[in-house]
Image (cartoon, rainbow, N blue to C red):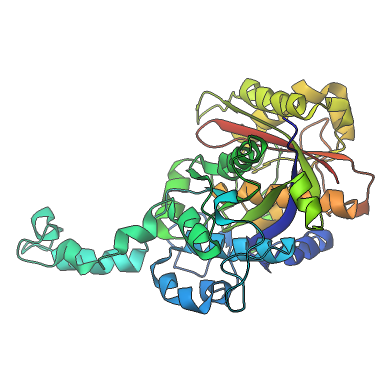
Amino acid sequence: MDRRVVITGLGVVSGFGVGVGALWSALNEGRTCLGPITRFDPSGFATRLAAQLPDAFAAKDFVPKSYRKATKVMARDSEIAVAAARCAVEDAGLVTRGSEGENPTPTYPASRLGCQIGAGLIAAETDEMAAAMATAVGDDGRFSLRRWGGEGGQGMEALTPLWLLKYLPNMLACHVTIIHGAEGPSNTITCAEASALLSIGESMRVIQRGAADACFSGGGESRLNVMGLLRWTLAGMLAPTGDETDGSRIVRPYDPAAAGGLLGEGGGILILEEERAAAARGARVHARLAGFGASQSEPDYRDGERDEGMRCAIENALDDAGVSASQVDAVVPMGSGVARLDAAESGALRAVFGDRLSQVPLVTLAPNVGNCTAGHAGIQAAVAAMCLREQRLPARLHAGSPGPGLDAGARGAAAANLNCVLVCTGSLGGQNAAAVLTRA
């Protein structure tokens, strides 16, 4: 394939705010946004810290005026994707149907603009669902399925007619494509933490085979609600937080004694373009997307013996990029702080890099922004692109002791000679993805 793919737009939403600049500044300053949960009362949970979006965040600020009414039927996840996509468009200097001004002339025809976005299984808002369920209480004071169905009560009829449209995972891509007029290939991938990077790989292939010239790609998710926190607690992914208020002291990537991870809400959407098309319009290129690989491991949540699957994904990405492990200058891994997942990831990295791994810096983000689940790898990819563009490694937070042979401990930001950066992630369900980014 002679259609090479470059990254021209970076859109990030995290607990540090909207825009990749807010994230990059915080990372270089060594800050965390993991703090007490205030979006709801978490007192019934052992985990009471997470990374939340700023209170001022509102999707209506990132959509055309004509589309603001639609934000009323957006779940938090869709709001994140819409905001990140808007930032990516502006960063790339693209004109789309959603751009400001009367009848803007889009940079690309609608049929040549695609959209692949990773999403999670969106949980219904607690207040919204509880208010409807309260109308379906039987005479005995217990929830009644008959009344929920409408017999002697409102039940599900108390929900708004468009209620379901808020919670379909494909609504992230749906809103982005409608706003920006992306009528090319579109897809939604729901594979937990691997979702965003798998979507980036899908966009890469779409452009390479000539089905589109540019794509929105990445992911977004928020599990900061009662159901989301409960699910991740039952999956054994979260650490008890006690009276701690600084989450970076709890999330310790690759530390065998780490108690677990913490959630964050956010995500990253990138603009990927065919290299010649980007050059023709004079676009600034952050990095080149040189290779991609994916695999599936046995989803054994208890022991996480999944080194082989992750190793295959990484080696496939390196092979696709035509580079060797010796040419990789840094790695942006998942590094969730969940010991069983980190053990599999570090095992795969040792298998790929051998003794050289101790000389390859790992850029860990979970102590800063938490685990943003389906959106996390989108943030990873954006940070990798920034590292290459700025020729700099951000500061790294770590309150523990990472395993031997890993360059993952606490340190300050530093200039670095970076030509090739690997991004990799596993997931709760066993899906693995890896991408190789090279200097523009």
